[in-house]
Length: 454
Image 1 (spheres, rainbow, N blue to C red):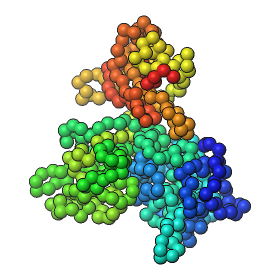
Image 2 (image 1 turned 45 degrees about the vertical axis):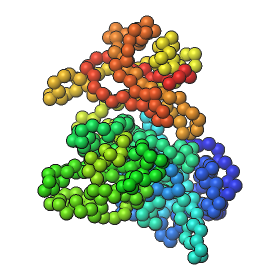
Image 3 (image 1 turned 90 degrees about the vertical axis):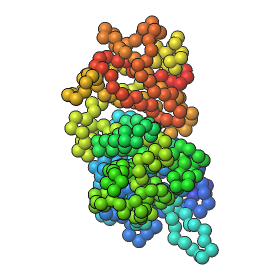
Image 4 (image 1 turned 135 degrees about the vertical axis):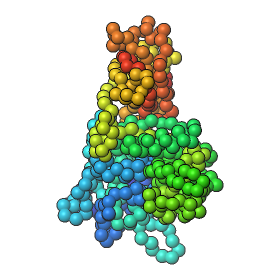
């Protein structure tokens, strides 16, 4: 599932017992070429390791020495739904009876669940200290409980899927949400009336959607005056309306995957605003430096500019008891082949018609309160294996045209005189682009196009 292992010039791996599994296919890449890094199994790190301690929760997800907050924020969201997490982290694994040094995980890859097996060697390091020897520390993800290892082993499995730990540096939470749920991610902003933003995010959370958010202002990893980090992904883990003497306040619960560094503004942990709330038992307020905090939606809008919302597919919705009438899903594969099916962008009118085309048939939503007959839909166009290839990916776009009831394909003449009803992209640095909208019932044609000719 990854490139051939590179030389381990500065990475020490202790000899393993002959009967324990060793994953020789795991890619040891440049992010591991650090003096002092030693690979150890959990039984060499602590006296009594456990895979999961008292359930897998979002507080088991704490960032290490790797810029992969996008993956950790997505995992924090997934922890809200144990049945979803069990798809990715199969139950029944531990370091007791049956332990052989291997652990199994599953990820959704382009229409199907793929199982990955890794050994439990983890990169550790000794932090320099003038006080003498110090215990070894995990280099990357860790749990708040030093004897718990499910989250760091999951991170290792995800690194194997993507081509190594280096491939996890910098990214978008939506990619990880898709890989761990099979859902479709819609990227949006936080602008708009306060009530509409809160109602939308609260409604999405109630429907089982997973939500991450990010700040896109300032210098990367720098914090503003209220300790919100720039170009850093957070998880939205809850929404509550609370009553105060001044009236209702709409709150969002947000988590920093670092496991620390929290919001310092109104409604922070232990803030004076909580004294005016009559029914604190109805809202989970934990005054710990655990990276999780509440904030008013107005402050959320001021400090976070982008949200990524993962709409779950039928299988995942069924596991969490979601919508009674889930989405109907279909997946199609295609290729851009130079000179045959690579028509480039919509600006290339002489060749755009060559791109693959897919038919979308919409029927009326069964919603008696809808004054206009229409159908809700989500279309995603995704490029495969972008991180594994580690080369500049094509900038993709998605265009939706009115279809012809007599034909399932739009030819050059028809496209030359037509304009798309909807479009998304080209997407910079994103693996996929998404169109989420409503249209009247009928036939439509989806055309994925590249930002430039392939």
